[in-house]
Amino acid sequence: MPEIVGNAQLRADLQTMRRGNHLPHALLLHGERGCGKKLLAKWFAMLVLCEHPEQAPCGQCRACRLVQEDAHPDVMWAEHSGKRMGFTVDTVREIRREAAVLPNNGEMRVFLFADADGMSIQAQNALLKSVEEPPAHSCFVFTTETVGALLPTLLSRMTAKAVFPVSEGECVAALTRLSYPADDVQAAVSRFGGNIGRCIAYLSDEMQRKAAETAAALTAALAQVDEYTLLQLLTAAAADKDLLRRTLELLDMQIRDAAVFSLNGEFRRLGCDRAAAEALSARLSPRRAMRMHGAITEAFADLESNVGAVLTATALCAALSAQ
Image 1 (tube, helix red, strand yellow):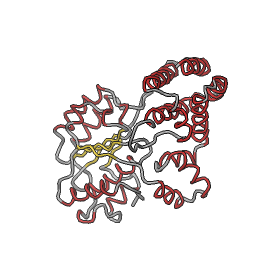
Image 2 (cartoon, one colour):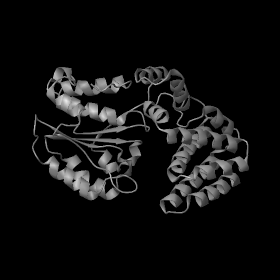
Image 3 (cartoon, one colour):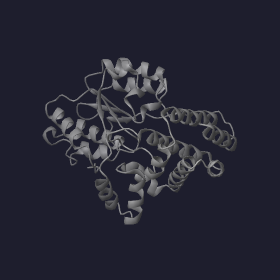
Image 4 (tube, one colour):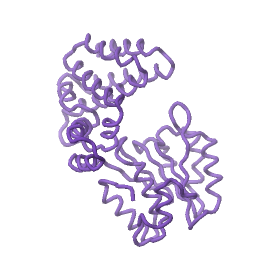
């Protein structure tokens, strides 16, 4: 069995549906990146195909083992393509053809669309009929960061379930079981809280770690109105386009956190440095936050259009400093 931490109620609800033979024919798992949606999608495939309904997923039967080993002939992961890593109409048509084919083993086939946020409108429309009137032996699973990533017409034909990060204590325990050093685990959790996926990326990917440190420093520079440091950090990140993209993604999350710190009530932090986001919040109105978000969005568009990374970083520095 894959180790799944948290989201116990979600799993219990789905297991109850399985025992009552009421599993949805189309399931959407939505939540922030890194919170385990793809792992849960795989667990759901095991739940659907397990040979022991009352204990599903048992993790021991042949079907469960094959799903876990990515070798089950009735489980198909749709392939991503294009700049946005979406799904083409041709890919969707291939899935539709496969969905009409009877299962190789057992009674069901499972088709998974992981990270479906970039699925084009044309691809979603091409999939609509299959999700609306699926063959009795077919089940579709989607994962997205937000519910709004899918068209309302497609969304209305599926069951949507939210997936949440775990508590910081649960995250520390899970990372410790993966044999990461205690100091590194604490550093990762201080950056990303209970988001196990993002913590693992921070611990295992040097570029992701550098992006987090740079985004935190950029947030501090914005809070201190330090345009010189802002320009230094952005141009240094621009030496590698991938690093710049990752840094800007985290900076955008930092600005989001700063924008909502002044609101009452609890909220999930998405960024990588609470203290820097709190410092920036003192200088940030909602309107200014939106303008900063717009400037970062424009920078992403420039990078996609093959504008030079250094030029993009310089223009972004000017836009952020003028806000």
